[in-house]
Amino acid sequence: MTDEAREIFLRRILPTLAGGVLGGAVFWLLGLPAPWLSGAMVGMVGVIRFGFDPYLPSFLRDVGMLLAGIVTGSAITPEMIGIISRYPASLVGLALTTWIIVQAGRATLTRGFGWDRETAFFASVPGALSVVIATAATRKVDMLRVAAIQAFRLFVLIAVLPSVVILSAPRIDIAPIPLLSAPAFAGICAAGVIIALVFERLGVMAPFLLGGMTATGGLHVAGTVVGTPPDAVAGLAMLLVGIFAGSRFSALDSTSLRALALPGIAVFLVTSAIAALGAVIVAFLIGLPLGMVLVAYAPGGLEAMVLLGLALGLDPLYVTAHHVGRFVMIAAALPFIARRNLDGGP
Image 1 (tube, rainbow, N blue to C red):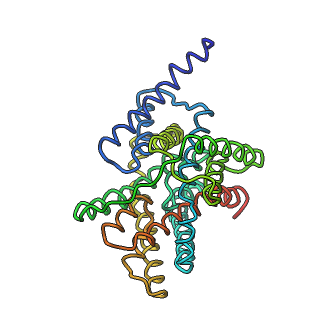
Image 2 (tube, rainbow, N blue to C red):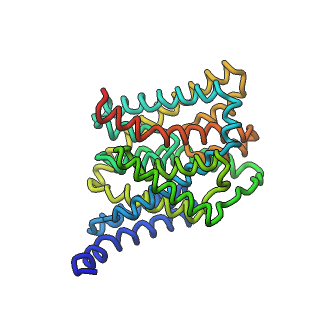
Image 3 (cartoon, rainbow, N blue to C red):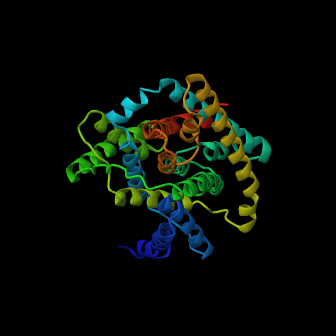
C-alpha cells in the first residue's frame, strides 16, 4: 500500500466505515426502523460534523448495491406471484395510486418549495426506501433532502402507527423463511455480477442493484434456488448503501435541517391522502374491507405494514402481496423511469 493510499484509508475510508457501523448499531440497539440503512446515514452526519470527508470505495458501493438487489429479489417467488394474480384489479389500483403519489409529491416539492425535479422525484417515491436511496445515491441529487423526506414518512408510518398497534395486540407467530444455502448464494452473486456488468455496459441506472434483483428473482421463479439471504447479508447491504448515500450529505447544517420540516410534513400529508383515497375507491369497487386495503396501500415500509396487517387480523397474504408487489415494481422500474423522465423527458 502506497503512502497516499494509506492516508486515504486512515483519514477517509476508516472514519467513514466506523461512523456507519456506529450509527447503525445505535439505531439497532434502540429498535428503530431500518436501523442499518437509516443509522448508517445518520452516522455519516457525525463523520461530516467531526470534520472528516467521508468516502466509500466504488468496490464496496457495488457490493452493497448487489447485496441489496439480492435481498430485494428474494421476495419474488412463485408463491408470491400466485398470490398477486388473485387480486389483479387491486394491484392495478395500487400501481395507479403509486404513480399519482409520485407525481403529486414531486409537484408539491417543485412548485411549493422550489426543489429541483430530480430530488423531488426521489423524495416522493413511496414504500421502497432502500431501492430509492440506492438509486438516488448514484444521481446528482440532494441526498440530504431525499433522505429527510423519506425518513420522516418512514418514521410516522413505520415507527409510530405500527408500533402502537402491534404493542397492543397479541403476538402472532410467523412461519420461518428458509435461508439460502451457501452454494445457492454464491451462484446468485455470480449471476448478479454478470447481469450487472451487462446493465452497466448498457448504461442502466444502478446496475448492480438491478442486476442482483434480476438474478435472484429469476432464479427463484425458475425454481433453481429457494430461500432468502441471512439477516447479516441484508444488514451489510443496508449498511453499505446507507454509508454511500449518507456520504453525500455535504450541505448539512442546522438551517438546512430546519428548512426540511415543512416540505416533509407537506409531502407526507399529500401522499398519505392520495394513498387513502385510492384505497377507499378500490375497496368500494371490488368489495374488499376498507381497513385491509388501507394497510396494503399505505406508503410505508414492507415489513412494518405486513406486521400491522397481522396485528389487526387482516388477510396477511393480501397485505404482503401488495407491499411486495409495489416494492418489486418500484425496484424494477425506478432506474428506467428515472433515466427517461429526468434525463430526457418533460
